[in-house]
Length: 400
Image 1 (cartoon, rainbow, N blue to C red):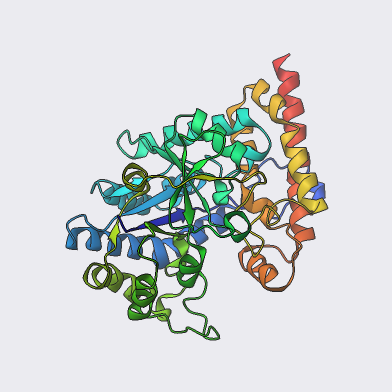
Image 2: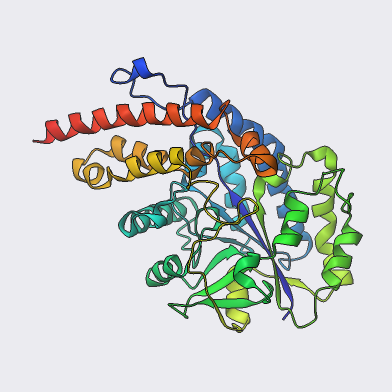
């Protein structure tokens, strides 16, 4: 078996509005509806709608031999419901073909797997319910954690929840001499299969495609086919994992990214011995070659492929710890609005905006952040959290 597995992450956070100190205690509405609506509609027009249509045409053109998979965060589904129902419908149309797999994840695109197994399970169950509601009872069999964050312990938790497999990053410092182009198993629960991203080929599309200073620019279909044909014949699966917003948003239409994707499947069928598979098909057809040992969590972010995009500096750790100190109180107060806001406040993007890295990774963080600086992101978040704690106290008093 030699196959290609395309996985796309679809996510939008609920961004916080500018929230000043003197508003604490008076304003309990934290979310920037104007910005969230505008960004969703912009990305829908530039990426989601045209790319969904292209994938639908490719699936039909090749009679289902071309396949992809998605994870759609709970927050992006909530935004589609509120701001862009036509986008949700287009994803439903894709899934209805039977050639698109959906993955499970945490509802709020949360880092809770690092902090609370109870909340992790709750978030996953909420996401399962959301997927089943919108996609005709669909129940995912494969899991992807937020930002492909994975460790042996996280994998063991996922295995206990009944999933067949999990996606993660093919990080160099974890693989060593091993190749990401095989199926591995979790070192604690070997029944859980682990699919690892081929970061070089994935990032050639996701990050370098339109970069004119790149030595391999421009990336043509023929060039990519040449690279695929150089992959050792014994390698079984090429996992191409990337943000869905790569198409049309990060890499603009003018770069030729849509034409590249339109031509790629046909060229692969004609000029290589690769097929296309969903993660479940890869797991079902390929035999694992061994365990992958990941004692310390990895992710698909930044040069280090670790957690430092979201956690590690004083700002991030303070905000994250303060948020999760509230878990038992939030779940004990029985207020659905408080619980919803707490889930949205867990979204990893809030901590990503507080990252203080510089150089190339810092440029990427700045591109995604609505704030002038990480310190502004921290102050805004902590102001909101201070008001949230006041609301929580009031709810606790009312319950007594």
